[in-house]
Image (cartoon, rainbow over all chains, first blue to last red; front, side, top):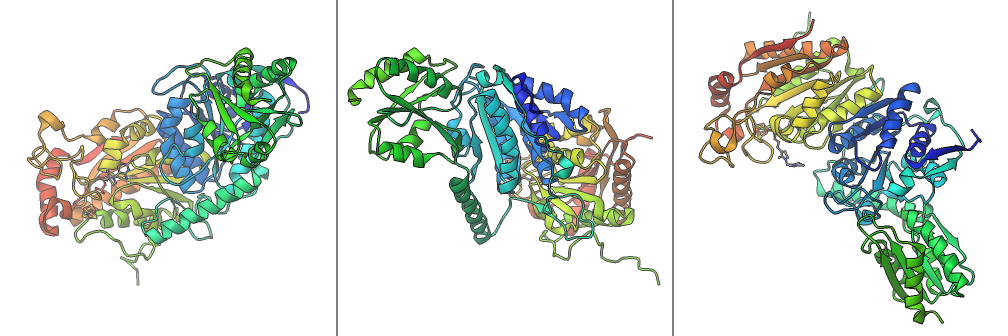
Length: 354
Length: 245
Ligand SMILES: Cc1ncc(C[n+]2csc(CCOP(=O)(O)OP(=O)(O)O)c2C)c(N)n1
Ligand code: SF4
């Protein structure tokens, strides 16, 4: 610990999960995240854990439901089409209030789409995806080190709220090699016991893991309890980073890989004398709406850049609330925007910059 | 004095919601008695399905899960892998196990997952109001096979026990019935074996229990068990299909 090692994003996330005390992984192969389960299949047996390649993502997410309900820290990972299948389990996990961590290395869609990087599952991750009134905490790293740190935090958040947490990346984050440091290591034996978990009703009342409430009054009560939890997340779990906002006249809002590209675009724009700053949401839910609303009082306009046809831009518009113009630039299908393209957009909307 | 027919500790006191003449209640009781007799109540974790027995988590007085439709074997797999020293069972209907959950049951069996499955085959979808199940008999009328199941368009009654018994991961597979006291006693024996196989760590165990659904078969309870014996048993032969020593 403490030393820096060069690791691929997918493998670094896997190792971070182990360092966070996760000993169970259930998944199904899909590009571009295979390095993650493959790493787990080698590493988990070394630490007394279980790697299981399930028959499908549907089964994998229900195995996660079982393992999480049994009290363990558990991880699953996939990419877009696989995450669609995991939505059944995810909705049940959220409904039964179980902690679990899900990684989505997003690829282009809809349908089978492609295997290149994408951010087109923003809606699915942040607005539901599965059925029912539920939310996931959604974290979007933009470097391998951040992927490591957020993965470790994801397990803490999941346990704290008894709620699933999703880490969203893309093929670039997953495949990129960067030096990383693991800041701590948790022994699962040291984790506090979950008194609600099912491990045999020895000398206690039985525990039940369930999301069924046939009486509508009971279900409403349950839904309101969940909502109170999501409100608390909005209060406590907002994460973002800003860059050169002090004198910014235009602000780019971008997350993950796109935010990294935006950083280069900002330097290029500033060389041209255009004062551009960045707000980088790290938590996509809860969304950093406050900092965006504040910025709306200062800057002239916003440019949202995404690898999608325009998804997060809706949340930015809600936060800006009509106070300023919100522009959008997106590439889709696995096409990655270049800094030059972003600068071109900035220049195009330059009219709004005084 | 010896108590011969007490109320099983492994059942809660909650009254069953099952229809009169429904044999789900008998099967619950057999499972609970077996858990009591094996002394594993405090080590057992059960997984309830989606179907008429969805509320099984309220009836069994052991740690319980409510799973999504058909996924109980996957949920049980997750639990068993975390607690390999505990006893894990699923309780599933035929829509749940033999239709939407076929992938999960086949792969749990094939992995030799050390769990016990109680598979209640009543040849129909009970909870949703009597639609055709994959186990519905040829010619049997249901709300979605109003002219009787036609094998040309709706296929054949699916024989789960026979299918699973060819998988190397299966350690014990049996089909039993609960249409009369003699068969109920046999059913209990099989259920007990299916738990013992798990305790001994031999592999996957499943007991298919032929069960009556008088409500959706449109029959009186007595008529229903007779129909079961006369029609279901010939299609679904009783017996032990696999038993690993
Ligand atoms: C994903 C999903 N699809 C469909 C349903 C509706 N549904 C509830 S119970 C059931 C059938 C249950 O039949 P079976 O497993 O045979 O059990 P029984 O009620 O006969 O005991 C169906 C289709 C559901 N709850 N979830
Ligand atoms: S509908 Fe059929 S299976 Fe369901 S409780 Fe009634 S008799 Fe039993």
